[in-house]
Length: 491
Ligand code: NAD
Image (tube, rainbow, N blue to C red; front, side, top):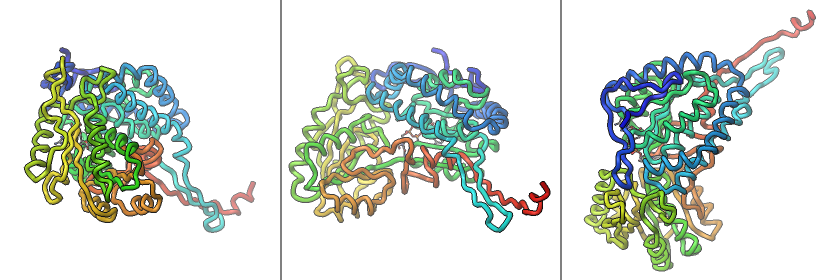
């Protein structure tokens, strides 16, 4: 099988690396590609940065209305090729075809939002701060920017950054996850048709060496990272050390409170969709469900029924509701975390560990699993499982549940199910998470809102998407100008 090529200087080129690793379909362990990996990929980064910097120096002065024209083309191309891209996402990441299509819809939505950059870039002006003197602020691009993506959204996550960066006048280097590089190759074949300047955006494959080369490269001005907290922390520290602007989104452990006044049927359906969608491999997946008050048995029963009814299998089969997890290692890690929950005193209400899918016996499948009464002082309570596992807890009051949420180290999202507006207001005010859902299971912000993680789920200041992205990808310049009246009178 051919080794994937990088897209550098608007040409498909072999990597300088002599080594590669296999890209594997998680549903059947079949090899579907080979991706460059290891030493040598840092030379690829350097080539890409040179091409991007050269292009950026002209692109920065192209009027912004013209800079968004390729994005309109990209939107159309993504829409026309949506089914094909979605099939690739399913093949390499395992999620269902419907989930893959949904992911690409959000990517397209970000392209649409970035098309409004001419308005978003408008700035502030104060006339006559003293007679004859005006003060204003302009936003200028940074230069070459970089994006490093995780495996769980092979198509969408790059779009939290890429369209905004280029619309603001920057160049960009994209490094997809080495586990799912095929989707971005397809997307770059479309980017190639948009008329963007030669070399402005580049695709470089690889792993840690590639990332380190990005972090250390003196001509890369900013890094947008999404992945696990340990790596996000590392990226933030090393990037900042090198003087770069960094936004680093990390892991999560998203809690959901269900109050006794919640609609049981609706809540249990939405919550199980959130826990088991994308096989739990979503940074906004609900993971700890806290029932409050005296209806806990009814809610527990409804969650159990909804979870056990879900069909696990190959994502290309339209009847399947949940695909495999990404790798055999990931499956082993999730199994051992379930066991840890049991060892720490928890009980398995629904056990998905011994699932076999006919025809896909080698797939990394785990069926929906529910652990209940796990220890509040154990390790699992604050460990991201990133698999189809619900942890079910019960607490006496909403205050106890909010205090529990706020003691957690992550802050990606927190959700509440209730029919009481006062409880909803209290929760949204007090919960220490950056994305809040009220009667919502996956509090994923639309493209024109920031993707607002807190605590160990985010390192940095400005988030991806919308206005935050415009601010992240530009630097402000404040100008004070004196034009004495007497000079005007001369004419
Ligand atoms: P990961 O941290 O293993 O990898 C992410 C990227 O970092 C990849 O491109 C990888 O090549 C690179 N990388 C991995 N190890 C590295 C190292 N030691 N040094 C430098 N670079 C390294 O994450 P993943 O397993 O691909 O993705 C899953 C994680 O991403 C989960 O923790 C999930 O919660 C998180 N995530 C967060 C968000 C968010 O918005 N906060 C969104 C999606 C995923």
